[in-house]
Figure (cartoon, one colour):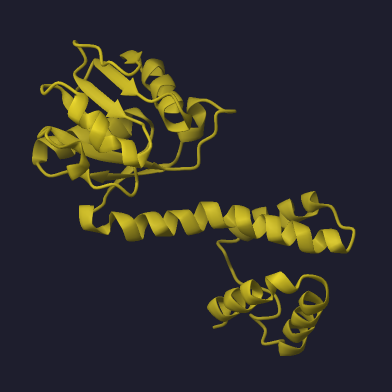
Length: 224
């Protein structure tokens, strides 16, 4: 559908996207000022910068952003616009391969924009699903819980087992197997073992009191 794409933003998302598009044989340019010949301009910039950057762009090519939380209307005044958010955590330590197998939320306003969004998702190696513009904040909250808060939970768990002299690396197989098992719930809450939960709370009160409220909130959310 497109042969020349310009990517604005060279962070984690922008670098991975540009690398993948080049792998696909497209002519890809990057930088603040778009290639005048680009048919599609992809904004991989911080959410708050999207409206400003979009307003600087000349009207003509398709314009897309890759934010999961930002409305597609942030691309005004452009009418040929859409959003495609890779539902994946990205790092500068890896390349385009980290997009493989991930899903992508696509948001659009016209049939032509849907076709463009699906093309971008497919070209990046992503599995697209349609996301209504009004649902972007709640969707992105779910994504943050799944990814960002997983980091928080690992850090908390590592701190607690560290109190017992256990290396944090010992938690990785446990966390990995939980995912492989389809997130089947096991442990004291699943089996109704309140005495063990009480023992956890007593230990936290004594050795990590700042985590008691977090444990209680998670236990309540976990309880059948």
